[in-house]
Length: 143
Length: 143
Image (cartoon, rainbow over all chains, first blue to last red; front, top):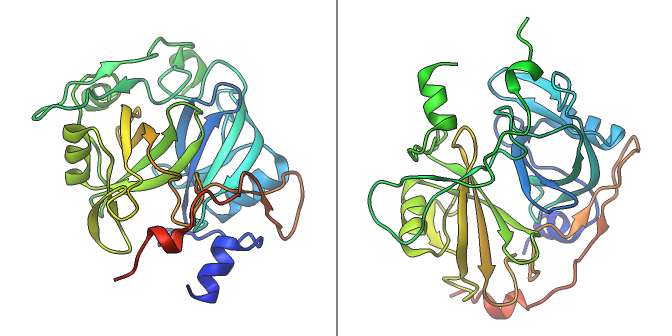
């Protein structure tokens, strides 16, 4: 193992590894239920703002901008714990999700469909925990 | 909302959205504890093999090859449930982790360090659940 690999994996210096686009992956779970709420991306500024404020900031690849979760919806995420993985290219945010949900479709979690296992050919998804907890058209007002 | 966005978000056709490198993000949690074990990537072949076999296959960006989790270590992941997110560019695998851990560093989870919140400046990580559950040098034999 090279000394730099050892530092990254076993050290206590926080040296996040951003990809070619300057991003890393953020996995966001509900601190109470443990359920996966969403997967997002962070640039360096989002990481700094999240650590400094204790609220979740991300980088939107589609809108090409920094955003604070809840800035439109009010559904802010209070970060209870922030962890980094072995090679420091992914973060795990355990959050208290304020408001009714994390998903822009109006659901608590973005992961509301399952793929059946053990079969070949075309996959037909099944809804799981897919009930809507808020009305996205009322929450995300387009100006 | 365009009809294609509606199909992707509200439909039951599984149409995974791979990035420019042909990959999507796979978030892997322990089906019993709910803990995040690892974050990995899948290409189309890894997705198909995971669905068909019910065991986790990934794509290694560093080794540029398809790999079955546990092929070296024996630490196979039995997939209990496979979910897809709203825009179908991320998967959530709830797995039964066989063997002593998911992380190549010898730990159960890759997320064994936390960043303290609410502070400015350089971040010093803290170990959390960082005890090693197996000896990686004994498990990953280099040929």
